Length: 292
Image (cartoon, rainbow, N blue to C red):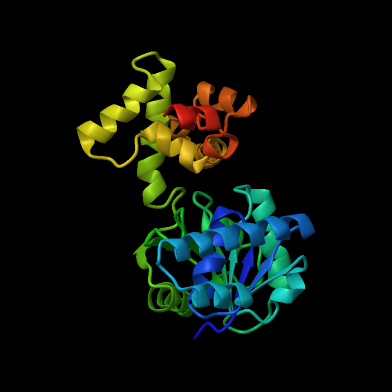
C-alpha cells in the first residue's frame, strides 16, 4: 500500500525532522501539536533546518519552498483521519503514548493505515495492545538529526501484520531513502541496547573521578576513532532523554547497566540538559564558544 499523506504528532527534533524529510520527498504532511505556540516553534525549527540545507547547497530554494508549503499544522488529532502513515513522536512516557494510541485508534479508521511510534525504548506491544487493531502498530525509531542520519530501526511486535511491516519498510527505504535495520520487540532495540550501557558507563566513570569529562571524551575520540565522545554525545542527545530511555529499559529488564547514575539525575534536576540548555557535561554557553 502506497503512502500518499503523512501525519506526525509532535514537532520536536525527531518529529520535525521526520516531517521535513517527508515533505522533501514530495508528500503532504500534517503535524499535530499541543497549541499555537508549539506550532510556531515547530515552523521555526523546520524553516531553520531547511534554510541550512539551502546554505549548504543540499537543496535548492525551490525545494525549500515546496517542502514548507507541503507542511500544515493542527492542534486536532481528527485532522489525521485520512493519513496513511502516522508517526507519534512525543515524550518517552508509556502512559502518555498509550493514551495517544487509544485516541489515534478511534480517529484513524482508514483500512491499512499505519500507526508508528518513534519510541527508542518502550516495547511496541505495550502500545499496540491499547488499540483495536494491534496489527497496524509498528516501531519506527529515527536518529537525530533525521535529515542527515541514514538509519531507521523498524520494530514489529508479535502482533504487527506482514502488510504493516512491508508498507513501513518500503516507505522508509523507497520514499525516504533511509536504510532499515529490523529489530525484535525488545526494550532499546538494537542501537540503544548497545549505546545506553556505554553512555551510562562514561557517566559512572566521571562520577567515580577516574578522569575529567574532557579526557573521557578525548580518549574515545582519539583512542577509538569515535566522532564524538560519550559525554559529548549525551549532551547532544539530551541528558533528560538518556535518563528517560535508560530508566525505561531498566524498568523492563531490571538490568543495572541501564539504570541512570545519580550524577546524571542530579544534573537534570539542576537544569543541565546538554546543548539545548547551554550546559551539560560540557559548556555550550556563548562565552565558552568564544573562548573555544
